[in-house]
Image (tube, rainbow, N blue to C red):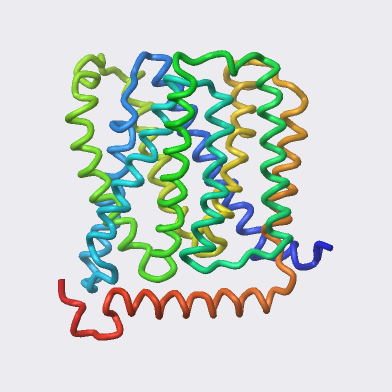
Amino acid sequence: MVNVKGIWTKHTLINLLLGQFLSLLITATGFLSSELARKGINAPTSQSFLNYVLLALFYGVFMVCRQEGIKAKWYYYILLGIVDVEANFLVVKAYQYTSLTSVMLLDCWAIPCVLLFTWFFLKTKYRPRKLVGVAICIAGLVLVIFSDVHAADRTSGTNPLKGDIIVIAGATLYAVSNVSEEFFVKSADMVELMAFLGLFGAIVSACQISILERNELKSIHWSAGAALPFVGFALAMFLFYSFVPILLKRSGATMLNLALLTSDMWAVLIRIFIYHQKVDWIYFVAFAAVAVGLLVYSGRDKVDQNVADVADEGIVRSKRFDEETGLDNPSQLKN
């Protein structure tokens, strides 16, 4: 039985609202990416590059001003930057080979990956009720997929098998990135995480652009119509990356990925009001199912017990992080 009083708490409602804010930001990035694609611009890494630069500059200033030592080893952030850049690149790249429906379906692979990684590496324990919430969310998205199948969307794509493999690889990297960020934000520092993710993400993106997208950028006829979606995408991604650590610290990577499932539902509003397309009624049923699943997952049986659990978990992770990075010995904090 779901404890209704445990669900309707201030903590839960803030998590749900924050999750939907992030979902709307992702929807905005998808809309802006589609606008760029409609203009014949195909430069996924270049789109993300400005976001990483903004993260490095904004959070880097905070790091320099507070003059604190680095809490995690710098090469961990290099690995995270590579994983994050390639996750974004692969999922966007998959649209060239497979259908929208396939990407939507296989992108959900990130959810079981996150559950597995958080259980194995972060020792997160999931109560049966939370697993029920996950199942309800996925069931809601499956309804959307079935609706798209009716529209014969699955038949599109130049190389579906190649595209599906790319999506699975990208979704797995997304899971690795989300779980890594959860670990760093709970055990190290959010400002440090964002600054180094931006720095190394920008470096990796710049190298990849010089190899894969140099000719594409040269062929673009820059105008307001082309530049505004680029800038809008970067700003939306900057806000997304800035608020993700907050939700990760409050609820974890699983909640983040479940909340982002509704981005497909919010995209329906764009199809209705921007592109004036008709959508099947099943979309609204699916949206309701995902909302119920998020509510069930977010709910807590006892608020005080959960707060204690989170505090204990943070202490354990902090101690483990200190042992791994040498923070238990202040003399080792020199770079």
